[in-house]
Image (cartoon, rainbow, N blue to C red; front, top):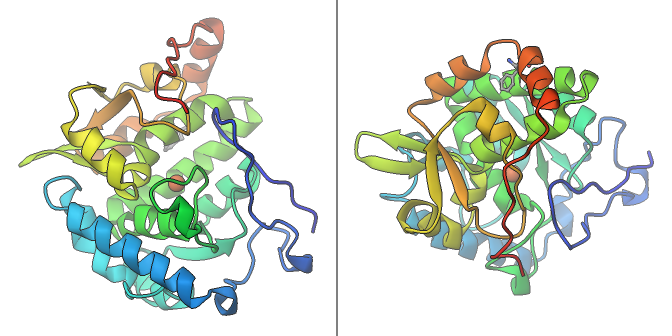
Length: 281
Ligand code: PHE
Ligand code: FE
C-alpha cells in the first residue's frame, strides 16, 4: 500500500526509509524484516554500535535495562526479530514487528495497543555512526526493546498506545507525543545508586547517554504531566530538559488517569515553554 514518510518534532532533515518496498509494506505499515538485504558491513555496524554502547551502560543506564539487554540475543550481528520474539512473547506478551521507518500516528498507536513494537529494519551507514536523526534498527532494538521485557514498562507502553488512539480522536497527539519524547525516548529515573537513563533515545546514543546523566548543562526536573506536555522538543540536538521519574510504577500510575481534562486545559492555555535551539546544527 502507499505509505508516506513521516517526520515528528523539529528537524531540518527529510526521512529516508524505503516506504514503497515494491508492495511488501502491509496495511498496518509492517513489513517482513528484510534480513537478506543486510550486508556484512551492516552487521559490522550493529556489532560496533552494540559494543560501544553496552560498555557505557554501567552507572548511566537503569538497572532494569542492563538486566534485560542480553535478552536481545545476538550482539555480533543484527538479530532476527523472530528470535527476539521467542523470548519476548514469553516474558511480557510483546513482540517486535518490522517497519520501513517512522509510521503515522494511528497505525503506530494501534500496534502498541496490541503489544506490537514497530522496529525499523534498516541500519545507518558508517558515516552516521555517531548520530542519526531517524530511528534505525539499532536505535529501535537496543534503545526500546530491552525494557519491553519489564512487566510494568511493558504495560505502560500498551497503555500509551491506547492513550494515543484517544489523543488522536481528541486532536491532542502533539501533546501526548511530548510525553512520549520526555519519557519513553528521553526519560531519566532516580534509582538507589543515583540518576539513570531509561529513555531509548538516550540509551542508544553514546554522546547523549553521558550528557544526560553527567553534564551540568541540562535541566532535570521531576516529571510533571502538564509541564512536560507544554515543553516543545527538537529531534536533532541533545535535550536541554530531562524529566525524572522514581519508578516505572510511578510512571504507570501517573499516566493512568483520563487525559481528556489535561488536554482541555492545555488547549485553553496555549503558551508553550520557550524553545531554545542553541545546539541545533
Ligand atoms: N491515561 C491516558 C488517557 O486517558 C492514556 C495514557 C496512558 C497516556 C499511558 C500515556 C501513557 O488518555
Ligand atoms: Fe525511539
